[in-house]
Amino acid sequence: MDTFFKILIFKITDFTQNTDIYKWYEFVRQSQFWSKAEIEAYQNERLQRLIRHAYGNSPFYNKAFESLKLKPNDIKSIEDLHKLPVIRREDISKNFGDLLALNYKLFSPQFRSTGGTTGKPLKYVSDLDSWSLGWALKFRSWEWAGYKFGDKVGLFGGASLIPNQHFNLNRFLWNKINRFYPFSVTHVDAAILDKYINSIYKNNIKIIRGYPSSINYFAKYCLENSISIDLKTVITTAEVLTTEYRENIERAFNCKVFNTYGCADAGGNISECKAHRLHISPEPSILELSSYQEIDSQIKAQEMVFTNISNYAMPIIRYAPGDLVITDNSTCSCGVNSRLVSEIIGRKTDILEFRNGRVLGGPALTLIFRKFNLENYQIIQNNLSEIDINIKPNNNYRSYEDEEIISIMRYHVGQDVTIKLNHTKEFILPKSGKHCFIIKKVN
Image (cartoon, rainbow, N blue to C red; front, top):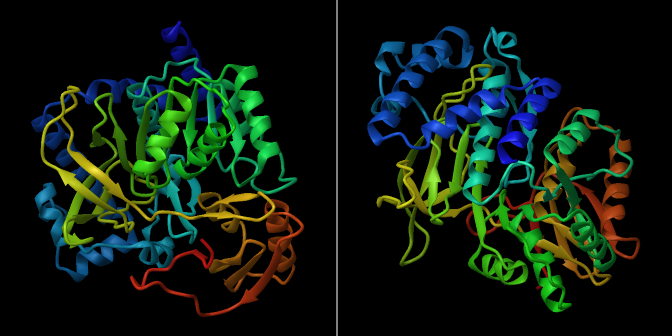
């Protein structure tokens, strides 16, 4: 039955969504068992192709090579990548047009954006192969976690974020074909969670995937109200999975949790295998690690730097998204030979909880605010019934967006929460100096 659903789902999905996921899925099913030598050979070959393409078609990288007096033949292997500079989010934002390949239309481009863990939207372009490979890797990691094609999956993410948003036929078909059931966690209360519980029972949903903080909140609600839900597996993404979250979720749903990390713009992908080890996927990108940074007196971590070797529409080389990992130089018993990390230290997102029982998930806020013409924003929770929304509009911002922001936030937090919207150029910074898009003044 699994094989039947697998072929059916992929064929219909590729036909209706203009993707090539089935081809890449067959590829990653084989590549997961490559030797370390095969992984290195593949990455070096793909890197050389990407470098030649970027030099010839990306104005940004052509200028970078010329200014550094480099030619494509100077970057032959992973060891040569250090000759090129590391770029960050602001570099992509400022140089979007120059990063875009001159012949990007040849690669079936998709214009996308990600809220990211900083909450600031980042626009990028993905080609057909890069996007399809990304989903093939998701399905592979789900299989590691126990997923079988045809299983019904509850998605605890940012579905239906904007009230009365225009119906999206492609998204509807995607969910139906793959048997996905979206549960919006932008805001929740007891009544909404009870509806989700009834839907899980009614539709016999056995797998949940989504934001760890939101799934943890749902798990705690079930535990506190003695609600029994037995799941096959829970797969987390988009946030740091804390030990507390993992324990609560596993206790509530009587299953194991599998963690994943994705950086779609740079092709970054890390997934937890059946032996509960975190594997770096070598197929979409090359991962370099910066020098060690001291997190505290006992923990040293390294920043991840990705080179996307699968995206030709917008080459992205040596991109640092700002996330840290603790490395693991051992080997895994699962049979997969890719590199390991022992822990992902991303930017942990807060959850806003209000006196009226509403809860607003931090990751979903990034998806809401990317709808508006903003350079940056920050939400400050002063108490259980009051928030300030500080925004820095960009040149395309229109006055009516003020009312839209307040209206959408009012929809999520409730009528009895005071909302103040302020235009500003300055934001509260923590001691680290890094921008936090949620500041909580209440415990």
